[in-house]
Amino acid sequence: MATTKKKAVRRAKKGQRIRQVAAIPYRVREDGSLEVLLVTSRTTRRFIVPKGWPMKGKSGRKAATIEAQEEAGVLGRTLKQPAGTYSYWKRMTNGFIRVDVAVYLLEVTEELADWREAANRHRAWLPPTDAALLIDEPELSTLLRDLTVPAADPP
Image (cartoon, rainbow, N blue to C red; front, side, top):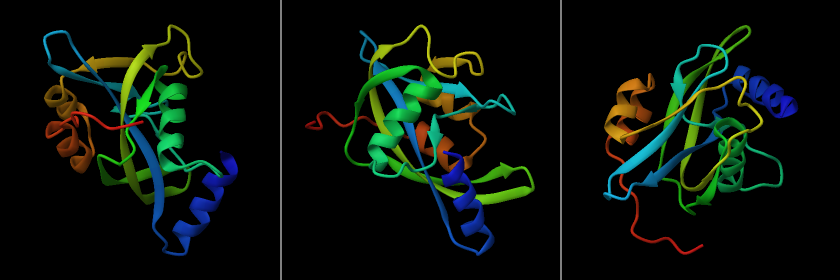
């Protein structure tokens, strides 16, 4: 992952757009209401969605699935098409870079009690409208607020 991050910083310095992938883990409750899972970031402790750099040899969908497992401790089925995109300013050691993020919906089938980043993050299940209020990135907030889950998406 460090190599990809270094490459991204070099590309950003040349004025190129930088890309990441993210997952919005979700579940449908017994009453039919929708909930999404947010996690805290490691450094600022703000609520975010699991996200990370693209992974060599893996699709954006697969990379988003891996990020959700590592950062939020959830497994499930990631929908094929991105649910949307958003942009944000990523804090780096020597400043900020603009990042475009493709967001995939992940239908959670299992929530792990212990996962890779469990010691560094907290997670919270919330209705999408409440989650939208906790997110600092305006475009992601809008995506969460207006979230709808497709009726069916073949695997």
